[in-house]
Image (cartoon, rainbow, N blue to C red; front, side, top):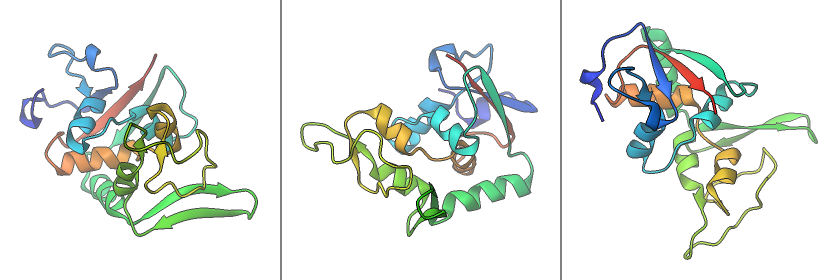
Length: 174
């Protein structure tokens, strides 16, 4: 996998969730494999993009503008925030937040069941349920329950020197 200095400078970099479609010729960036390597856990770029735009569908694109100092620093500040929006509680008519940990810490605390850790939460918990240290039956439900924002992940990967500074086009397709 190329390091950040090996990417050809572009005005817009293309993020590809399917690593098998990344090549030196097309210059696409395998976002899920990079995030998985850095964070030690599979990352669902679609679920992360849906945290930024809940209505994004298949065969869609979303532009992440992180070239300017202001946009990039805002993404990094948001990544480091210790308050996470969990969702809207229609019963109480209020937004629900979790404080005391970053979205990355929260996401990393959610696991998939194995022999040593059986599932502790139902497949489709309410969106406002606190899932810190939850164990799901499989990855599909864990990803659906919570994945960090793709914008925040991009900001952190740029800060770590894994990606070049710039604007990113996320392509989601089946």
